[in-house]
Image 1 (tube, rainbow, N blue to C red):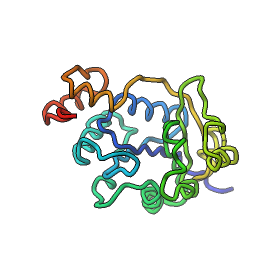
Image 2 (tube, helix red, strand yellow; image 1 turned 30 degrees about the horizontal axis):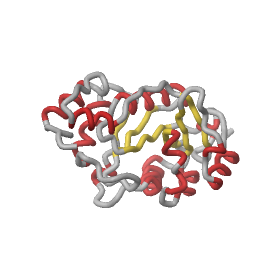
Image 3 (cartoon, one colour; image 1 turned 120 degrees about the vertical axis):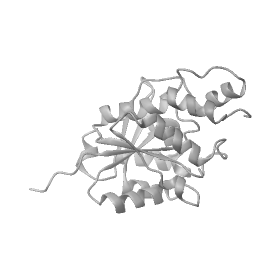
Image 4 (tube, rainbow, N blue to C red; image 1 turned 180 degrees about the vertical axis):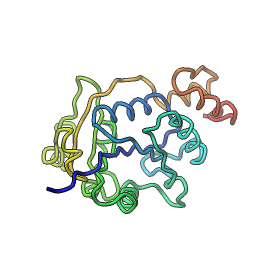
Length: 220
C-alpha cells in the first residue's frame, strides 16, 4: 500500500502593499476549509501584474512578518523579495518543488479576480503541473466557466474537484471555497493614509505601528 502523501501546504503570494485583515482571513479560512497543514506567504519582490508598489519589498516583507508572527501555521518565504529579478509564479513553484519534494501537495491560493486573469500569467499552464489551485469567492457567487476566458474555462471543467483531491495528489486540481467577505483593500488603506484618515481595525496593530514609525504611504 503506498505511503500517504503529506498534508497539503497552502501558498499565498501577493504584493501585500500593505498586508491587512482581508489577507489574513483568507489564509486562515483556507487552512480550515481546505484542511491545509499551513500557509506559506510569498511576498512579491518586483510584481509583474501591477504597477510598482508604493512601498519597497523589504518593508512589505517586514509588515507580512509582523502580521503573521502570532500564527504558528503561517510561514513567510522571503525568496522573491531577496531575488534580483521580477516575481513569477511558475519559477517560484519550481523552486518550492525542489525544496519540498515531488510528493508534497501544494495549493496555490487565489482570489476569484486573480483566477480570472490566470491566462495572462507567464507559463500559466505549467502551474497545474506544480500545484493545485484553490479559488476563494464571495458566498453565493461561485466561480463559473461563463465568467472565464475559454482556455481557462476548459481547465476549470477538466480539473474541478472537491477538497479531498488536494491531499490525493501533489498537483493538478482546481477547488473553490467561499470565504467571509471583509470590505478591506490595500488601495483603500493607502488612500486613507494619504488623506490622514484612520486605518485602525483594518490591519493588525503591529503593522499599523510599523507604517506610522516609518511614515509610509504619506504621499499616495
